[in-house]
Length: 278
Length: 262
Image 1 (cartoon, rainbow over the protein chains, first blue to last red):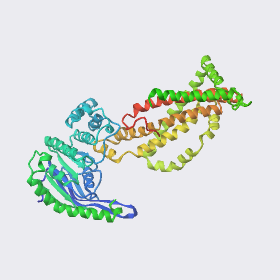
Image 2: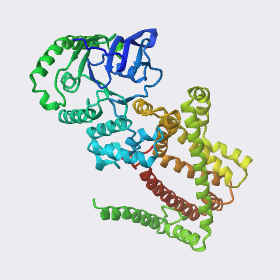
Image 3: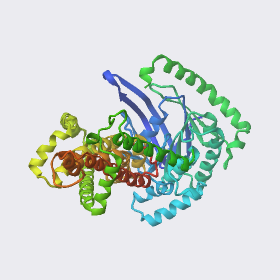
Image 4: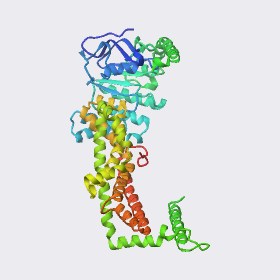
């Protein structure tokens, strides 16, 4: 059940990382407790857990946006200091620059690292085509649908060719059909060069359909990693078809038996102590 | 309602109002004038006064001066507002120290500053520009300050993860956000620039629309006062149209561009 760890190629390694926030009145809220997680090079890992369990916190540590109070983060075996420059981050909320057109939003990731504008725009155009929005380059984000904005976001992150991809419920706000289409698009793009992916979701089915490994977190506060499963489904996969697979169902049942208790616990806790959960 | 119909109705309002005004100011009703000509003049006299100003060309000099003062007040006030707004938003300590003084200065009715500015800067355009600046500055300042403070944290984090340096964040995130807030208050700040110029002229000057109105009032020339008011309204409407066009162009990226107001 525990995934094997090969030294030397670990893209993201969290070693007993603990994250705590100081609340009003000198109370301390521990979001994540001693998380130990390895993402190998080229591996697609999905993190699933009840709402508010600190999944996003885990991503923020890996991105270097947050610092753990204890434990450490290693990126390709080097300790992480400051921002994780090898990572691309697809946020849950809308993160596009509303004052830039779609193509400028995609090109900016190259321009920041000194690529001449003409070249950046050219490559941005080809990325827009890859996410199926080649004709929408001059639209502003508010003129695009939620799904289209997520595609632009994906192109914006991938154009920098990050070695690690961090995704925080990226398809959360989309409708079911669009989610499946986006999932297939993601798998298709990922298949081209197999980056290390850390994908956070609350949807267990989505996690199994997409990932090589599914990691389960317990309900917060002080969320821990309580399970780690390999997904034995063959690649390339089609999200809609893979859900019909027998192995998919047995794995889903197995993981759900663990996850269910945590989800219930999570609900109970958020009902009891709204202040601490905030 | 169709566009043509709307236009006809709008014109009708003007015709009815002007007609009533003309009627009540020239025809006695039950042996007594409801709008005594000494206090109300009448549309024909006001119109001929406006016609005279334009036909002799005297008005252009005054319009040009008021316009120039407004533009300077807007430009200087906006520049200062953007700079200080940015500075305060990025340096919370500085903002905290100056906070009570900013509030105090903003609470002061700006008209009382006019005599001081006249004393310091003379009767020329600069005392009017200064008055306009004090009005424009605070509007732009508060908007830019808000704009920089309210940049979405996700957008900022996204910028950082996309490899932006502090300088690039400034240029691609803080700056557009602040400017969008400033532009959304464009109508208000341009309006105040004109108010500053005209009030300044009214209180003491040698040229400008405010001067024209004040001169007419000084000799109880009510037609002149009304004529000045009409020219001023048209002037402000024209400026507002220009602002709307500029705003549409600058805020295309916003939902409901052009409808946003501060």
